[in-house]
Image 1: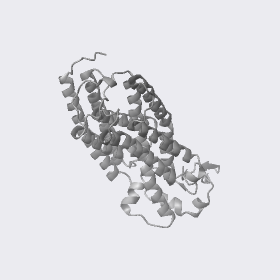
Image 2: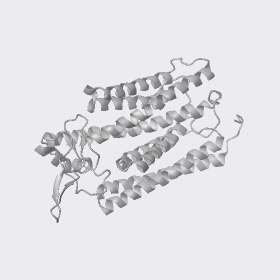
Image 3: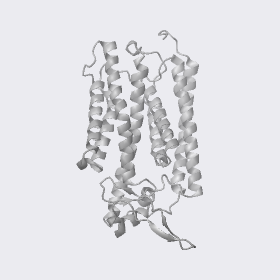
Image 4: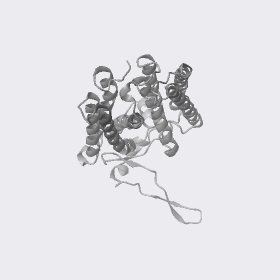
Length: 362
């Protein structure tokens, strides 16, 4: 690597233009998602209420009995029962909603437009990250501004990968785009740093390995946190229906379009469990880099401490999920505490705490 390489101001300027352009497209995607939820089908609203109020559903062991249908020739055949999902507590079976709105031509059309705009915004933002890297010929995550734009790019990319392989995740789109706009807004106003060369301590190939895995972990942890928050809302909705309550029309319209609480709970758990080993590797890689840069593997630097606290919090969550008494809402609260630790490790430690990792640039 050429340590004395000058900054290419043209590419740095192009990066800024691309980041602002991606924000404009994300804004269009945000309004398209709003339209999807407003104009989407309401025909399936009430399925959860029916499932929770039916005595037969309460007594079911886990699957609905197949219906018998007699064909014209007198032959009796079994119909496939409606797919239902057992709740996290294992006490009720409720159907998934149709995902993020959809169900009508207008709702699906707006949904497809929203996803298409999200893809375009992702490509434009990725271009902004790439040109930022090319402007100084290094990894584009040496300060909080660069970390933020890369983080949001990876988060959206992870969502699009899930969308490509798993159909019923479009419900993530609206909260994701909203958060990305907030992240980029903070990045370009408060966290912005001019494109420049690295401080000496960061001149290492471990910058590519350690920080890139930290960004990927954070992006995937974020998706798990979205699922956990929505699980808590959906679970409260299902509990209210199960106790005979009547949620408002707006709450019913939104909640019925989400997957069941059980599906959201399972989604969050699988996401967090899948990325936890990579977070473990991130901490180990950081320790190895610290040994090369500072002559010790662990020095109780604030960033090191909070990375470990985050690891402990997610380890406790995963252990709690394997314990019968800690499924459902208790485990969900622990998952959100773990993600809050990750957020503080990024924002709080970098901005408010001084240490060897003080490369925020703000």
